[in-house]
Amino acid sequence: MKISIIIPTYNEADYIQELLNYLYKHANSSVAEILVVDGQSIDHTPQKVQDAGFKCIISPQKGRAAQMNLGARQAIGDILYFVHADSYPPKSYANDVVQSIENGAESGCYRFSFDSDNWLLKVNSWFTRFDRLMCRGGDQTLFIKRDLFEKLKGFKNYAIMEDFEIIKRLRERGTFHIIPKSAVVSARKYEENSYLKVNFINLIIFLMFYFGASENTMVHAYKSLISGTKFG
Image 1 (cartoon, one colour):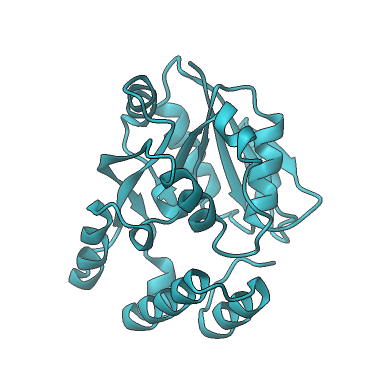
Image 2 (cartoon, helix red, strand yellow):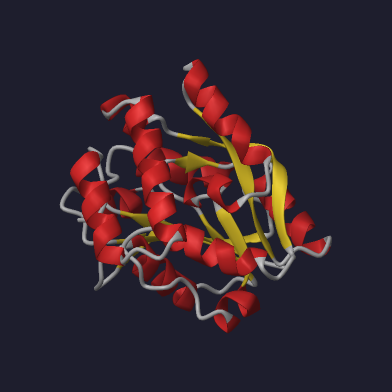
């Protein structure tokens, strides 16, 4: 089985080359391609991707959901592996994903840890070992069998919570696997704001999603409270 890695970006010029080089270095024969889908960045992200020798697709529509769906349509792999630009899966990611599929999983993710020694962030990441929807998120990376992704018609075209929405549908099938290793996630959002503030707004947005709040309401709440958001 072949893996297509799909990375949605928006203004990641300072970070994207390091991630691409890391993923390429630790890929194996199972990795068919690494695609970056850019949401019309106003920095030099597409040029940085191309300079590093990778393919960058420019999405006509901004937003991670639209970008990841576009990447999936152009991907050639049997397994779609969605990786955020500030997340580093374990070096064993290619073997982990294929082995999970071979063992019966149709989709799944990692736990996560932060690139920080802050003990509060360590507590935050500890909860990702539990199989609960509120403990999930796109930062943990997400793999999905291509045929299942197409059957589910991909990500809903949301500007926020698109990862939670599709994971909710995936978990209902009973074949979602949490790999007992951790992706390493940047703590920069917490550094720009604060641990308590970010966790408070994350909880509020999750509860809004859980109880059916509109997309516009969730986006407005998130943008008004969190610095460094990626809505373009």
